[in-house]
Amino acid sequence: MFISLRSLLSARFRNVLLFLAVLGPGIITANAGNDAGGIATHTRAGADYGLATLWIFIPLCISLIVVQEMANRMGVITGKGLSDLIRERFGVKITFMLMIGLMFTNLTIIAAEFAGVAAAAGLFGIPKMLAVPVAALAIWLLVLKGTYKTIEKVFLTAALFYISYIAAGIAVKPDPGEVAKALVVPTILPERGYMVMLIALLGTTITPWMLFYQQASVAEKGIRIENYNLSRWDTITGCIAVMIVAVFMVVVSAETLFVHGISVDTAADAARALGPIAGRWAEILFAVGLLNASLFAASILPLSTSYTICEGFGWESGLNKGFSEARQFYILFTALTVIGAGFVLFKGIDLIAVMYISQVINGLVLPVVLLFILKLINDPKLMGTYTNSRFYNAICWIICASTVLLTITAVIMPLFLGQTPVG
Image (cartoon, rainbow, N blue to C red; front, side, top):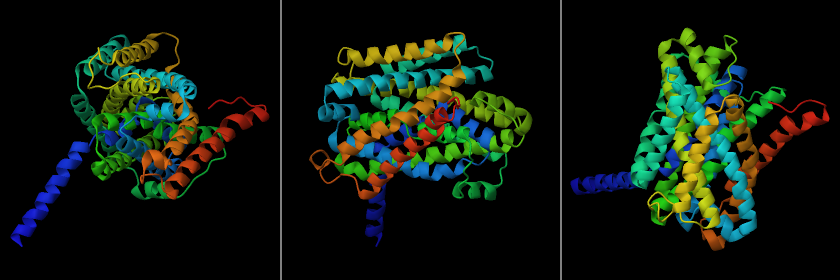
């Protein structure tokens, strides 16, 4: 019996070590989705509509798990990034158009991340003309000098700081019963702004860049097929954790700003408003969370875009390669970082609009990327026995259809009614 117990404990210890070995891509990618734009969107949802948008978070969590798990699975089974597979399957012309579209979409999000850095730094009295260049330089040095393992450790540490939003949510003392009810009972408001908000919540939760980044990082980490189940749990854990944090963001603003009739445009506005209502502690927690999330995503977005573009064009890429081996990868990363940070420093730029619109754009681009993924992952020649189940395919088609339907409702229909299609 003693030997049997020791063997059992030994086996469990080995499983823990294996899980820690594959841990990273899923948790990092999911948490990076709660970036500056995401925090602004969740905060605005709570401030404008109270708890009325919470019902969508459980379906969003299931959808996020499904789509990120597909990217994870393709990375493990094929050992290649998504852009690489799209180029091989659909040809250079289609890949080129997709890469150009994704690059400009991601560039708006990178600018939004540095806008978040500027806003969060401002809460601590640091001017953006100092904070943004210093942040950009620190990010550039981290990527240029670090290896995949060291950078992954930094990113995992940054992911831990999202607990500040859970602490802020507890500090405002919400009614658990009301929150639970809002999570499971759908509330539909007949307003176009509400429909745009649902698109933005979808766009900030499931983003094209997350799919590309997770698959690329899984491929670079070299996770083997025999460790696929552990890698899958890394993805599931990350998705559940990020949705819990997102719910707390909405709850914080709903229980403070919404009930006091305070409208905000950014998470920084929310942090300032929290002080008089919920106390300085809640304000500091929200501000720390925003700064961490902005720096975290400002590091990952240029990386994700560089992976995506270089794979699409067949160029060498990867954090384990030196500058001479992956010249285009590092040049592109540098350019995206400089342009994104520089954009924020220009006067007269509406940073609020950049942060919010970037999330809506994500929601519009997502169905296109999912169509490519569905075609690839259902190919038995590529995936063998690891193709999608009917359930997975059904979820993906529902996501595509829902996004298109929400877009028509929120953007196209007002044109026929003689209204201006703005959020």
